[in-house]
Length: 112
Image (cartoon, rainbow, N blue to C red; front, side, top):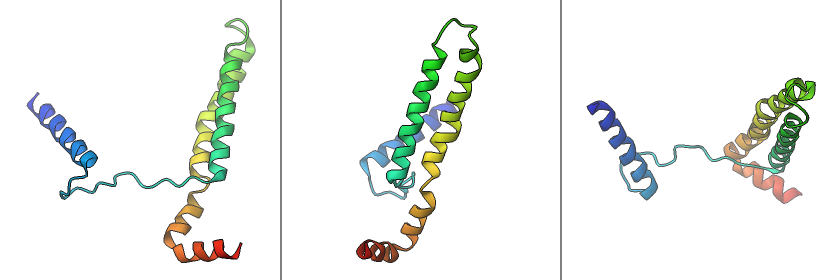
């Protein structure tokens, strides 16, 4: 019980220090910066539409309808496990190159 309490207090203190950005020996940037571009946002929108279609197919007809039992779960799995992760990772390679070579990114913008 006491160890759990100490862990909770430590986590609460850590979160408080991160929120207040006090200068302790704590790295305040835990999550990396996520750069979203147009491809990511379009893919997120497509994934959202696919998931909405999946839920609509799930609600169609009686409970033993073949569409609700087989097609709707496949559409939902496609949306959640394929399209959303693809939307997250689709531009990560270009974002990594931009982070590593900011001069190249600036020269590419100037030439357009």
